[in-house]
Length: 70
Image 1: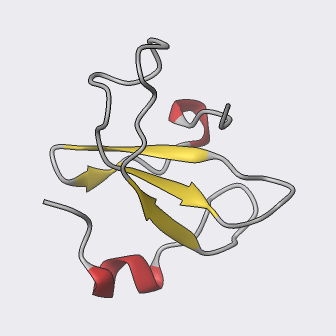
Image 2: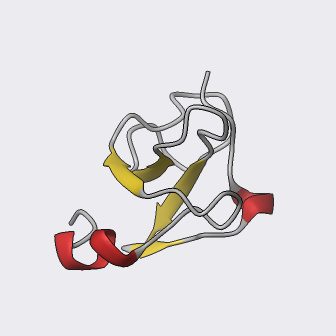
């Protein structure tokens, strides 16, 4: 189940405070995520762009857990 739209409206990137958008790209085998194609939240800022994992339907909004997009 994806992140609810009402929750997504209030979430922001902890690093730069830009809005987040839902993504299902996953980390496709780079070892950064538990499974390829798992849901993620991506920062919409051009300068930040961190991608945060969603585990068990809970966004993990920790900068230490985020990855840079490829």
